[in-house]
Length: 337
Image: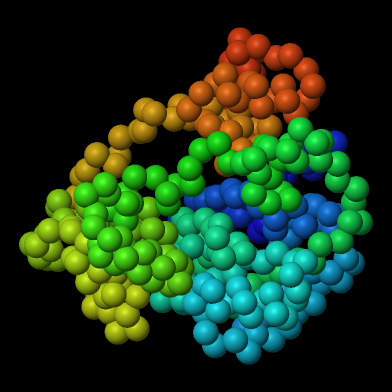
């Protein structure tokens, strides 16, 4: 199921869509992401999509104004760039797509659901499409719904797509410090190797940040199995080649399923059970409740969130006002449990 913003009728649209699913134990899991796909859905007057049943053959969904077409998918190359180029050639540059890649087909828990080659989300949500035999969903931009974007947002130098009204203040998760980040000590040769590694993983469609955590966890707790000599650039090159291989060993399939999967399989307690303290969850609640794009504001700072709300509403809320709203949201959540 894919939903756009909860405040879609607001005069200044918020860039966000939410993908939700339910696992075998009945627990609901979800991820949200901004971008042109959400914006194009809104401009076509679609507030959400619900996928029922499974297609008998691999299918592409294509949304054009009032029509939803189900086209057979002949593309056999599911690398990131190949899929993106194929969809652009077929549906045009004035479209936006979300799609699965080879990582999903290999059943990696760290597989990303990719949007237009560059954006994406993990949490194994790409399998929501794959289980329905849906390879991609593309939407053509049609202005059936008038969407006003104030000039203050259009002029923002951080703004990277039509669907983003404020711009990306914070780094995306896979760009945060990880094993595949650029180090000052790297030589030109190492930088070239690193770029090849990252391109390899991007083409495969796996969550780079999640894979970094999985490798670090295995090096610390499971090296009697993996036998990594170190985690230098040559070792990472070797690991990632095995990750994307069509004939990878079971231990590398496990590695591509993430740290939590490894913890559960090998019954290991680690620090990952502890709650993160650097981003208060209450702050994230207020962003979610407002329907804001999580890339559009830094959730570490409540003042930043307050300023964003005031920019959008042309009102003058204080930090105390927002803290009180957070408490009210907490009460409402408690009453629903």
